[in-house]
Picture (cartoon, rainbow, N blue to C red):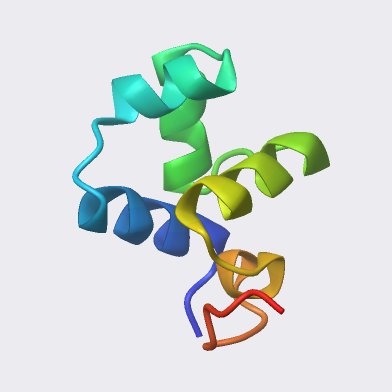
Length: 72
């Protein structure tokens, strides 16, 4: 099952958003966002919740605990 970094990159590409734009939305540097996607660093809970809301997926899907992206 994919992990957070893989899901994050996949969702960003599907939505056709640049990583620089994601960094701006999260109020972090582009390099820090790249660390999220490479798996070097896990985002804080508040950022993870923001990302799940932004991509309209469940937290479990985003972090790789489920293959069902639906939010309940």
